Image (cartoon, rainbow, N blue to C red; front, side):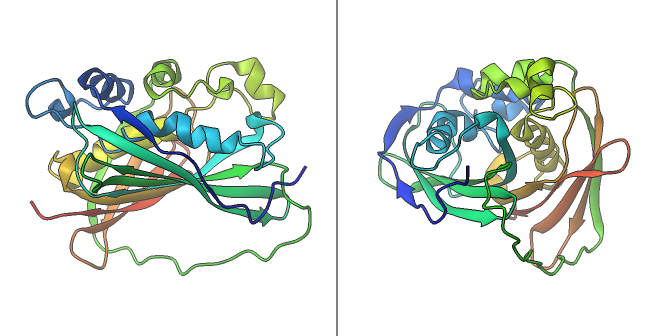
Amino acid sequence: MPLNFGLTKTYDPVETTVSADQIEEYAAASGDANPAHQPGPDQVASAIFSVVPGFMLMGASGSDPDLGIDNPLMIVHGEQRFRYHQPLKPGMRVTMVPSIESVEDKGKHGMFVSKLAMTDDSGELVIEQWATIVVRGAGSGESRESSSKAAPVKGDVAATFTKEVDVDMPKRYAPASGDHNPIHLDDAVAKTVGLPGVINHGLGTLSLVSGGLVEQVAGGDVTRLRELSCRFTAMVFPGQTLTTTVWETVGNGAYLFETANPAGDVVVAGSLEVAAP
């Protein structure tokens, strides 16, 4: 059944307080050993930690009957974007406002963009994040012209690093993130929706990669991030070793990156902006 194309909607705000334990647990589940994420007076959340307090809210938009998703197991995470205004620290009380920004017909599939705006007690923005979600088989079935964008120009290679996706990463990441989708935890369930078996969480992969990006191009200082965005282009499986290449691009502090699996297939591609130290 097609989605409700054209729907836009803003939901009620929710308040929460970020805890030191949440920050530490998420970093551990992400394989991020940056000491800045450990408890202490200078503790700060990792690059995409904001998905933790916001997960249930963004998920709620996807389960809204007005959107029209019949089978949540047909959901695929297509893109993710973060815009950073100030760092998240333990003890911060934040207000989160979720919304559906757009719902589009992609022919065979449907797609919607969910946004979460997070502000502090004074009403100042902390982090904005967007998730682009593809719902397999939820399009109209009518042909659609594909939009093409000019490929960004890559400059010199700024860094290359590898990260291992531990075999048990999905089982660690699920409780730390709140994402217990069984396609990441149960082979049998994953196969019922056409997958070859358990796949790594898309945000789990991004959490692993973003830790390396902060280390390599921000000197380990996550507070220097200004924006991070990516497309999830292929499935990642537990046990794989991923190689990320980072290129400088036009503009001071702007980078492109691609993460590839052992076969050389790109699984995540994106960009980031980093402030000067």
